[in-house]
Image (cartoon, rainbow, N blue to C red; front, side, top):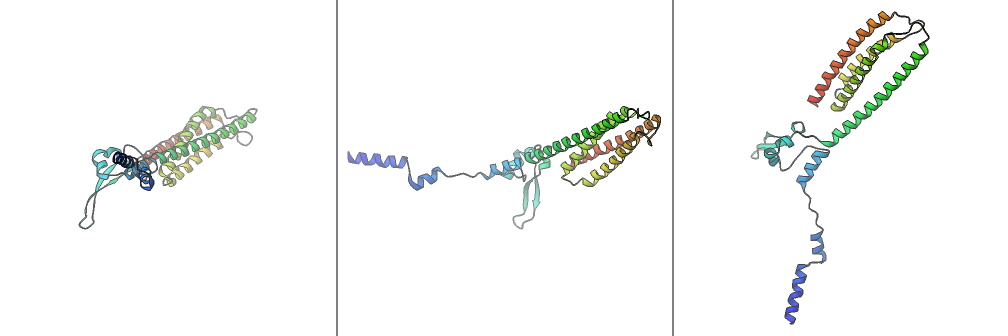
Length: 230
């Protein structure tokens, strides 16, 4: 009987280990480096996956994997590296940040445009009594506003997409656009000392509209370059 009880106690002790060894085994944390690389690539970067040859053969489109030759003495051979721009998915975090910044710029520009429109409206109300009122500006106003919105959004996108690398091209187009806007504002001036026949105003607005359309086209081209190279 004692022999049987002793055997049962030993079996129970082996089945339910305790103490330092048992606790250490139960609380052991397994660190998966492969999953960590995958999560980090998808969230914030850098763009890297493991095991590399597995992703090259089975998930090339997803990972953007490519091979290259590396000289390393007797260990020379082909290696695998990952290019985000060759992947059909992209890092989440930079795209979120870019979208947020673009949205902020849109809101800011819309507010500025609203203030400008309000100022122009107030001026028009004040000068309505004057007989030298600009009667043709309203025929072009919506087109000007629409194109200015396209220009603003396009240039903002280029700056954000290129992370400031397209600043020279953006600044030049912005300078040309500002000159056109200044010319429009000058032509739109009314009141004493700013008398101008409405036929002349119309001719000027037609020319400014053509120039602004050219700026819109150039901005669209710049956006295409930003999408292709950045």
